[in-house]
Length: 264
Length: 264
Picture 1 (cartoon, rainbow over the protein chains, first blue to last red):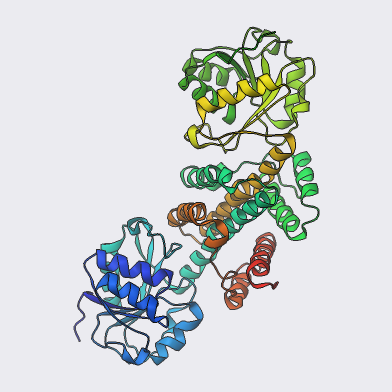
Picture 2: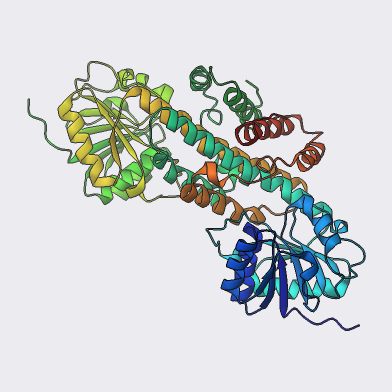
């Protein structure tokens, strides 16, 4: 059997990852032949933008595509893939956390196509800079996915299940947890009748600074300065909020230990 | 006594805030008449860039300036201000956390000039967008500082001690603690022999997304999806790292409680 490079794609999943991938694939000149999603309205919206057909029925999936992208939640991958028709094309998921083996073995050509980014339906971050982690069961497919990746991004990296899990864990800290810190700050200001707007330049500069200087060197704040007086007064301000006090204490202890070899 | 607007400034402190303020004041056409700092080399460097005199002796501070800015650590403000010569000009500190009352009462004209931003000696974030919180003992000085602020920034806000403390607490979460999350992610990748570079686009997009969408709406990740399977596997990966497990559990519980009314 001869494997060709990827010319056309079926995208299964109409959420944040699926809608972003549909757009970027189309922009790169690939043909999106079908959008598949439970939510028919969403599937139609993406299909209209990309010139694709659309369906909400897994047994209506077209079987002649070069590539099938399962851009769905981790826990749904095995089930949805199991209900798809058997296809000759390459079937990949986009999960940072799930093993390649979650894809059923009746697909001979299996892979992973993991873009390390947080996607939103309303935003289209530039794909060129997004690191793309590639994996496949066989070498030819690995090569085919690497070539496809390079059409989309400047950073395409061959990877394995363990490395993806490690990347995903680090990503939870730098993205999901830092966003939780923003949300806590926004919540405090709301309670104090102050505007979240005030924090925006600080949030953006903190992120840019960490990326230029390395986060270890960019760390500032009371814990970095070992300023126990301010820390205690902050904890007084948070004394009625158990969850926030706990988070404040743990992160402060972490910084104190790292930079001053001491705990709270 | 007649109060004029600010034409010239003495800056006391040669760290991140002092060096940034010296640059921005000069760019706005103010005369920097003196830079004062313990570290004479740093004072000289900033003085050369701004055409100012410089000294490391508090009793050599020139007494004819319109404004004296104490851009020094919170705990040093009272002591350093106490050792300054008594001046007729307006004396302000730049702290988010310290009361205006930390300045000695023998200065008749006291105030606060708090830019809500994280500064680095090697970076000069655009000052126009930085919210500037202004406070003074008397109304005329409040007005004078507001006018000065408006020459530097589009967001100048009259404030009081309590509001500044509230802003400062929120700032610790969104800046110092989110940077700690970046540092944890970078540390994990280092341990896994993966590059921190991979996380940069994610960090930047997460920050931009939260600022555009509001952090509450931008939240993603296993806890936001109530994906207990992934959470437990992450905790297994962190089982040998007590501090990181604790931080992971606390923030995850916070997100689970907020979005799913449940805890870990």
